[in-house]
Length: 136
Image: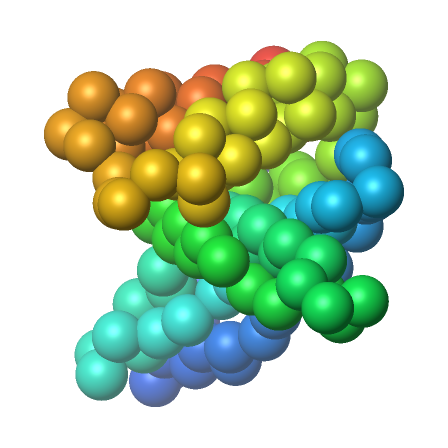
């Protein structure tokens, strides 16, 4: 059958945040990776990957870097959605641990992010999303 009938009604969007990875890669740092769905006023979904880096200061972990990556392309959106449903796959985990985490540590130990570091983190976050799409 080639015909598809769909009832059209008001759009709904239900925002949420889901931790998909929490890791302590070394004694002085830990990080979280979350999938976040927020909504526009028109109920359009906005899919994001959020990376937060925490540094141990006086025996307490304090947030030192926040990265919010909003999926822009259909492939990135599909990948972030897949990650929300299925968690982090090994290829995505490798990028988080070996690319995003070291870059975030550089930012934490510097006066602030440089344009070059911002671009590297953006590229790595896009890669995480894209690697999720390749699994769907």
